Image 1 (cartoon, rainbow over the protein chains, first blue to last red):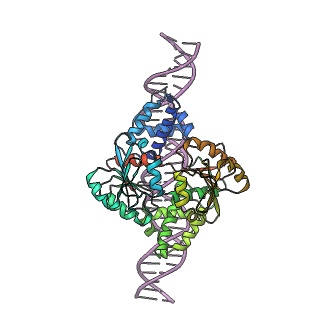
Image 2 (image 1 turned 45 degrees about the horizontal axis):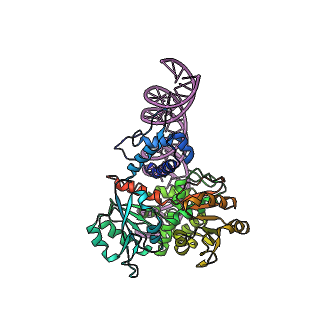
Length: 218
Length: 218
DNA sequence: TTTTGATTGTTACTTTTTTCACAAATTCTT
DNA sequence: AAGAATTTGTGAAAAAAGTAACAATCAAAA
């Protein structure tokens, strides 16, 4: 449908990380090559869709052979920006912020966490792993000094809008928003990616209430 | 396009929780009525889309007036299953499981958490808030004894598949999956709702890498 | 009470997304 | 080495989702 240059649809973008994840899994299992059909079966998609998706970025496969797992994984990783050396900072070292710093593998996704911020004086000055915790008052100065690609918003919802605007003003490219708030930023080119637990659980609530719900339809 | 009985598309289902959230917000601000146009503007959608979405479930508005915020919120809440008295149990009381029990407002989404399970003997027998922690060995017995609608999967990825199958065998209707694994269950009518942090962050990574990315297109 | 203005419910249309189909290319088998 | 079996890349068709348009209806104003 389209080659390089044309805009890639959101639906495709959302599938790319899944491909990457599946290919990582396959590589781990020592699988060297895979066909669109086999991959489709693994992931509950159609072969056609996978080929069409990959076609957006050019041909990575070989007719009669399929796709080389390692190579395709590399390609998709590059498309996703894994090798771009992205940096992230955490805003709000509460339960969730703490859990993310400690357990989430930012590195696997091409990000390094360079700092965290909170208002709690008992946290400020301490470290979680290698991540230094600063006071939120130091945020603006930090953003002037270092390049930060993504701000991770794990503050209570009342502070979300204010913090988000500070991140945007400070020049971040994206905000990973865990605060259950619809952010309306005054910054058109900052991308907001929402992780709304509530929305997810409510969607599940709806689906388990339906007498028959085709689970492939997701 | 369709009335009661016909299947509601996934796209619509994903918007319902957002409507519910926005209406809750509006109610909090004391707004009594709202038009599809105003709601659309608030949410970055089109009025047409909102009316079309609501039309799936029947007419909740009034011509020349708009929608009553309180009533529409109630209706959507009911559609989502907020009043169904859903129960959930937590599998895995690590950092994330702990954070969810302690901070996530299950009640606001119509769920009550009735138990948590872990393998760590230092946790078993203790409580987080009102939630009792049991040993995972007791899971099957628990599922035989109590009705559990949703299992929340916050175990390490290696245990995810096994635990998910136990939940499914135990008769849960849905699994809220935080383990970064594609679950392939042997249970066609169990709904799996994935919360893949990695996928979300990688999608953001892609989008901040694109020179121009229309952020409305989400 | 009548008129004007606003806004929904609903059908029709447009755009986007997914699926289908098949030639071209490659591997595998004999 | 030749033929059979795969499997991709890619354009076209089908399906789904989103947008537009407008008659019907109600509220508010005159």
